[in-house]
Length: 596
Image (cartoon, rainbow, N blue to C red; front, side):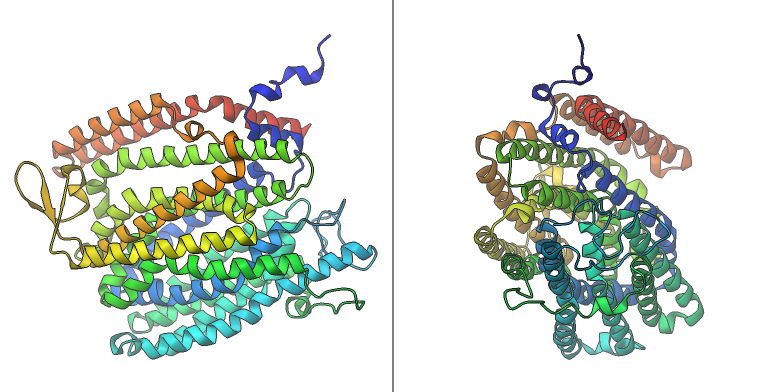
């Protein structure tokens, strides 16, 4: 007699990650549902704003674009990251105490037409827990006010005359800071969205997707109306407009309860702490780590802002925007969904051995996908980039460092960034305060590697490299196929960031190996050999076709090269699918089980 359970593969033959999903299909941190929603958010917002960004590049000069996209954006990202990242990660790791509720707020319902608010006092233990969460979630805004004053003052004081003399410089900077504080103000609502059961990700999709689109539309419209002389002000107005959309969408979902963004309920008894001690300790440790992490992540932009002229900063900003497009669409949502899933899975106190087995399966799968991305980039970007570059970059950027920076960013920084983000999401979800302090030491070491590498690359007269790397730089041929190169400052920054990121990846792998022990097999993180062989053949074939130069002689040759690349790209994806079809089939099956 055959039971329904026997219709699906046995748990022993299926990937542990799939067993985790099917064991609890209603898990609020289900990585399938979360990743799909977040990937959709990034894909739609990026595709819709791509054409608008093209207009921005043609309306703004490299100097203005460099000021807005490098310097002002660096100030905003610093305020946001340092103010909320550590507290957000700590709160998301805190297990919600609510049961049978669609969200955490007061009058919780599943009706899409109703709004939601904060919890009432019907359940004392839930009320205390949620009050502590709310109390800690409003801290980022207060911290942001202090950090914005410090960073803003330091930036204005240290800015050179060429930067600060731009029209509406100080007003624009103030608007950028205002936009950052507006984003921080909805942090309590962001936490509640993700702690609800299940997470109301549609709200986040609408809020963040609409923010990106609103920001681009207002910026383009302002540049057209205000003219080139007020271009910096146009960028600032776009930032405020996008932040306003974000705030209004979250407030609409939570009944326009503005007071809850700034004030929390007082403890009801002498024995009740305003903040959960364990969560507060983790938040402090995470915030300290965030400072080091942010310095490493933004080290290249910090250095570019200090050592490069404004035109060079504009070229670097364009290259970064294009180069990180794939990572923002695919790997940023995956990293965030993995963070939620790991945090939820590892917070369970029971069946720790089973939970570890399930998590390690998902961990190895995501690392393997990152390696596949690397193989695709290294196979297709080098031979196709010369034909695509004139289309991606406007004419005024062709004479800047943007073409060379974009190429190097794609073939080196993007693969490492994807692997680093995916592996660090597990560290963030599983590390104890003691392990976080250890990670900080590794980050300090990686900053030393960054500084030493940058010092060497910017001070040595030249570096000798193998022929396979010649396309990344302006070569000076030195016989026998070997080349002598002089990397620009921007190229040296990218290579230095790559070296620092390798140190962080090593720590993340060491942490995972320590956590999982013998259950983590390195061979399970490696790609399928057939895919590797196929990627090598693709690389050889595309290079051979590109070297003929027919793509530069007319549109027929260009279509021949790009069409061949497209067909081979689809074939490569098919090979990857076939190599991982069992895993993908189990993911689809787990989704079907949930629907039933």
